[in-house]
Length: 97
Image (cartoon, rainbow, N blue to C red; front, side, top):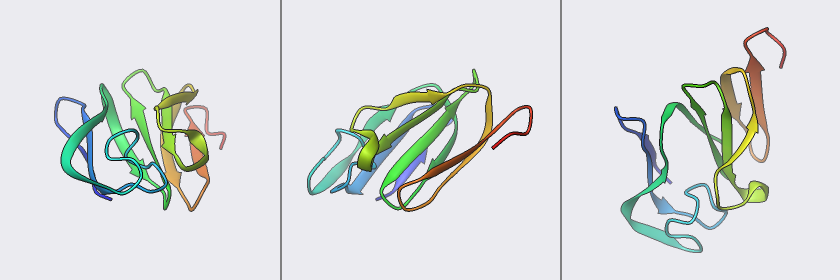
């Protein structure tokens, strides 16, 4: 399940997608072409069964596994995030996790 952050902020994905880390693109089996998942991202991360992105406005977006196929805004004022199997840890600008 490769995901890619392009220079223009587009998040693209291809490959295995049974738990939804590539969003709607190729859901259920395997995406055979690169497809757009999210736009205007500045950072990108993945967990085992989900993915996440931070946009320039410091909003955190997640999708896949229990989060659903559509990217959802889940937190604001985020400077870093990392994913595990099902969980996402995020750090806010003030330093809280």
